[in-house]
Image (tube, rainbow, N blue to C red):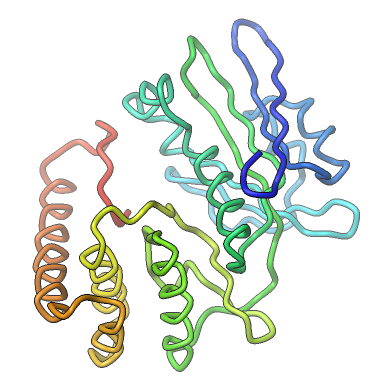
Length: 261
């Protein structure tokens, strides 16, 4: 049970591997069909109608069942990296974290996709393949004029003690005047005002927004808000330089992941 949402865990063995599924209560009937397939066979079985992304990092596509649209997401990069596989021995996989995050966000009355099912294929206890299925929202991208509304939604999240984890306009859409969160790493804010300020700085520098939007967030910070924003800005610039250095001189296959990816 998470929030008010009941989750059922099912599993089966298959040729030395273990396939685990997490399904929401009252899930669509097609989930029984999905759970008959191994994760690596799922894409061909679902016959997606639109492929949104298909590269080394991830596969994202829309498929239809019973006149409704759903999204299939496969985090290929996370499934492949040896270090991340190893960490699934003692912590949740990427898809399970995304699945849980969607449930938490909905419980907090913030608009987002409805999770349906996530699946994991484990060998020797490690997740080597996985996927997530959730409802599709037919909206449009956020426009610059709507950034103040978007910041208001992020502020609601911050006020409940959480950070988005990748505050970028591409991770939101709008439908009927409402803003929907599409993709979030969604983590507990352990840094207080600094965590809130960093997300605003990250958004400001990625979208080249008017600095007044950044400073408008000051009411959520302490009386040292300008200092906090300065520290967050300095950290953001350092982190951006470090990521560039890492990409240029290190093999990305080591599986090291940094906040903001």
